[in-house]
Length: 326
Image (cartoon, rainbow, N blue to C red; front, side, top):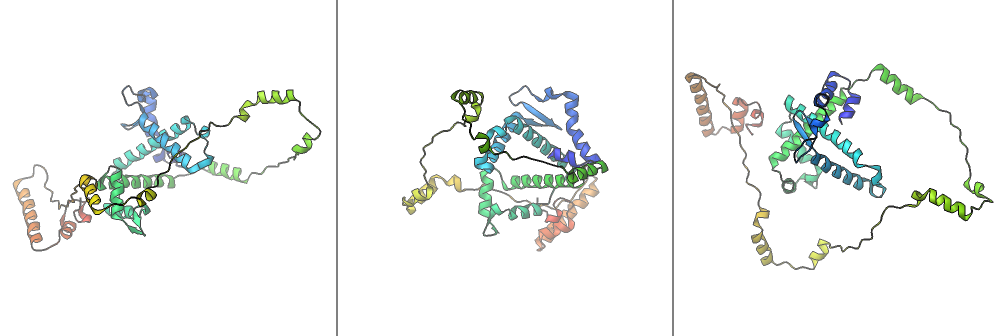
């Protein structure tokens, strides 16, 4: 990702990001990133360490994705660990740079936008509609809460937006444009001769010694990848389940023994109206703030909606437009 940015973006911002990564290596050298503890550090971006364990885990995942995507065409010798590790380290460094930039610039999407985006994900939909149960199960299976999952999605969206902005602002020099045009419009004259293998072999029979000598010189051409013969038994849950009769009593007993599996963690949704008083404020300022709070309380007791009061009177810019929702 960062390689693409550095190749396409020529402005001061792109070079600032490149320098952001390069300076630590220039000042302290690669040895400072090797680490001496149980978690060897491969690279560090503005204090964020990328460990050897993270890299190896990503390499395994990348290899599995390649194996799944290529199927029978997958050849492990074409994807060495060294090549995959280099790509993974570059990807993790790029993500760390974008993440730190997002935090430094305080970039974010609103809660409403993030939730609408999550609702649009097909994986969480049934018959084209958002399925709350499927969403909750998927979030729980990842060991996350709804809030932490939303924050993760928010960071991914902002990082993607930032990356697109950098690439979209890329500039090309006149020399680069001319080189591209020259390469695209160039022409070559090609001549070839077709030689028939059958005609070359007519009237020629190799001797036993020639065949043996050729085989000894080219043994690797007759090598095949190691193969394994596997026998397995497939247990289909639907087939097995169709032969089992489950009574109401058995279902109740299973539920009683596994109640924890069917319970979701308790959650709270909090909203507030912020009335700010500077630290060390005098008694008059504090009294004014207290009076405003009491006024809000009385208006709520009279039936005014909390969300409308928050939008109109809250001093918290982060939650004001969401009716005070935190």
